[in-house]
Image 1 (tube, rainbow, N blue to C red):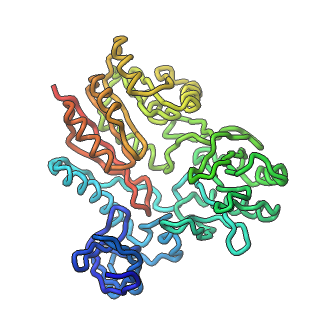
Image 2: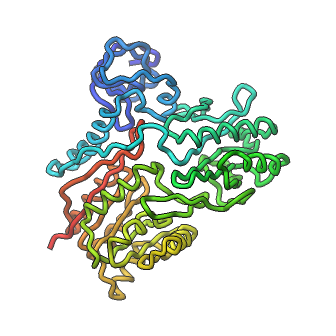
Length: 449
């Protein structure tokens, strides 16, 4: 097989990244934008020892599950790499990801629920983070083409709240009008690197964050004033990121206009959100995710709960009314302050948050005589550390509720919990990110006597 060779391929499956999977003379070929059951003519783009990447030149036989995407850039950039697949099949694909991971781990006996559909299939994101670059002599916003840093200019982000799209375009036009230079990552010059816009579904409040190379530039005051006059914008912030890095956010935020926080809700609990606060992206699906976890945990009014990786308290404060006490642990001090303030905001008196590493604090609490009934965890994509898993099991809660944004690391971690005397019978996938391959999943581990 050689680069630029054109082959006829039959697509057998979808990879976890939502690429079509075909086989040709012992080599696995990943074909972007192809669906199972299709026969395609594909051009080979890259060849490795046992696999290759290709792109469609023509579809010879089309899948009945294919949707014609008006704006193919959504698929090309990975912004919505499943936009060409019907929504019911997207839900099947996400469930299958979890089933396959359990089979590989020899856990075929575990029941996998049907994927919980999102109330909205598009326009659901309450936050957008988009690169700002110069394209053909003009400042543009958009998304990088898959596996590259080539910006594809966009004026419709499809999965993002349309009100956020409106503000993104208004800010783009203000930057253009004031001739603010876009960031040039090759030369490490320019001003605005990214735009971030957050919108509260509960209040309609909008926060605009300019992520900039310098913390000041000649047009900044005028730009900040004009952005603050966009309808519903109540907060304008500059995030300073002077580093030559792919990391989007810098360490320092400067309030340019309006309020430092916006208020949003999960169910009936209000949250103040700062520029760096982690807040679930899908506003309408998040209460369903948390309610599913609460229902599966079968909580009682006598339960003492630890909310590990607690962030600004979204899970713990949602759980608080169902239990006796919630204690949260988070490594980021600002998030802990926000969590305690959010408890006060909602007059929740049985939840408190501390700064530190959960694997150090949980054993200390146990030593001090705290009897924990349930631990809730919702870790980042890399999953839990071995130290955390050992510390959680040593705390001997009756149940561990594991919410995951990456079923691959979740299944790995569940196996370790099993070795430490915990078992689980079921995993429920939840679609928090329609049109993308990502899937959340919820399971409850129980301690075996």
